[in-house]
Image 1 (spheres, rainbow, N blue to C red):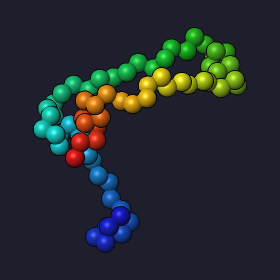
Image 2 (tube, rainbow, N blue to C red; image 1 turned 90 degrees about the horizontal axis):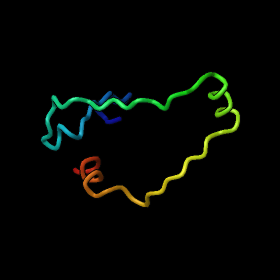
Image 3 (cartoon, rainbow, N blue to C red; image 1 turned 180 degrees about the horizontal axis):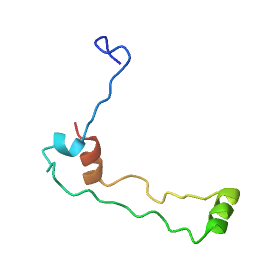
Length: 69
């Protein structure tokens, strides 16, 4: 939101284009984790999922690619 757009506006930002990366690079599509059947999915929803992050930081190259100004 700015004085020019008090209701805000949509911004389409691609950090790879801003860094001079190829705009026509193919997108990498990740496959979701397979669910065997509805029972397994319901069991996961009922009991929750435990997520552990074993990394203390992200690699410098990835950090620069994501957050470089």
